[in-house]
Image 1 (spheres, rainbow, N blue to C red):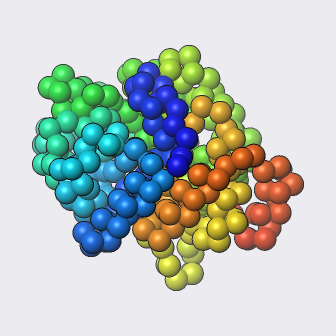
Image 2 (image 1 turned 90 degrees about the horizontal axis):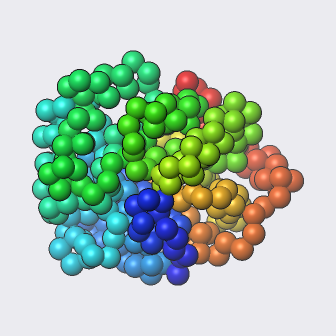
Length: 288
């Protein structure tokens, strides 16, 4: 079973690992149901999905009929304007077969100009605040991708009192001095405000380039269990964070296995050896 700890001010005893439900975007309901059995096997009690994740919300919906009380349920909207977002939130509730989610997030908020629109008059943030007032969600969060993610999330926290952030974190990213500094500042701010820090991309290996895509993830993930163990255990060594599994139906069980067996953080030398052995490169190097 996977360890649980308090999810910031949300005050939910969440498993250290979060199921990244983008893994359900293109699978059948039978495949999704088998994924639920894996979650139950490891005691995972936190699911993160999005209206943008293909059929994921539809695949989760049938689970909620019997297991709603077993999971902290988070979803996201990628809409940028108030009415579109409000309509999309209602649609997500219908697809998930629930009256309320636990966490509703603004999705992928790393672009400065776009973020200004989302958080300004008539923007999607207004819809999330209204959804909370209506009881459609208990908490409101924000996510961002790319090298600017921690800097932008810190900026967003200056504009609105979000309950959670979702930010990339892996060994190679944190070897980038600017990213590491921004991430550290974001962590300090989140600790001050007791904001939950949920992380992603722990097992990013490289961009696909000309390689055939063998996983649903937009980046090449690590697939060898020993390599996954090291990458995951390194992220787990970062204090006060939660870790989302990889968004692929075949890979996510290996991440849960790694999380369940965490004992110590790999050394820098072990991580350098991993990077060399796996031919790893920063997955956001082509994304500003």
